[in-house]
Image 1 (cartoon, rainbow, N blue to C red):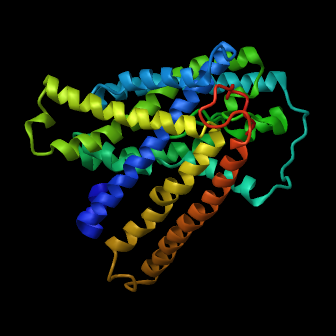
Image 2 (image 1 turned 120 degrees about the vertical axis):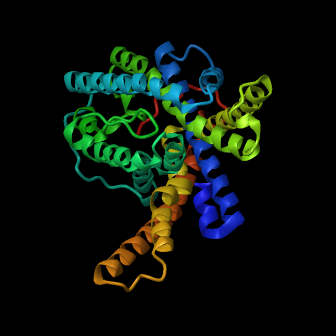
Image 3 (image 1 turned 90 degrees about the horizontal axis):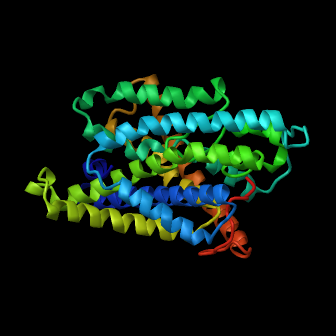
Length: 359
């Protein structure tokens, strides 16, 4: 992403885009630490302080990010995919059998702007994988083949909520398609939605989801760490050399990034609030606004070539405007939610149980 910034705005653009990408990825890493602590609280019935569970998540994710190539991570991703499919199917079946809700489906509800838009930002987050696309391209033996993989990814991401009950977003954060869960769980759907079932089924679902909670976080951590490592050592033998010094540098980068992610997870311990803030600050641009900016830049000077081109100009200007709206309203909604939740017993750096948060 930093390279794209350099193409458009020179060295300044490179630094701005690179810093934004790293910050985005670290926030997503924080959301995985938070999810891991929620999972441990669920499995152990809040056996100890949530901060301790966060530290366990930090150690597990740190160790799993130590391999320096995405090849090893890609094998783990297969296990991650199987685990999340199993977890959400258990959740869907459990909710369907137990029917914990009152049986009423409210297609529309009366809600305020802040609460309503916070829900919108959670949906946006599920499709915010664009920030990692360029990094994945650089790891391929045949980068020109990436569009095929991208079409497959986006096609499945778009269609699977309509075809199958569960949904897994790009980050691996455990979100079940709330449209399906809501039918049987009612208005008390938990966040993440795996917590909407009975205690036994909830523990089974979270146990099955452990690989995807860890692996998807590791992928984001790897992309962030690789960017910094390449920036520091590009043009040196450490790019390909296997030595204690190169491994030590990589491990230090990984340690620093995951520590910052842990601080973020502890500072914003409510799942919905953290996702809303990430979407407002970063997904608004990396998924929407910058897509329009890139197209406008690549086609500059040719906006009036044809009616089709002029129509596309309008579409991409609209994308930029959508990004601005998401950022503005999203910051308002997430900021208000974080302020309200900070007054509760489960505020920042709290030992309180974070596994019983309503969506």
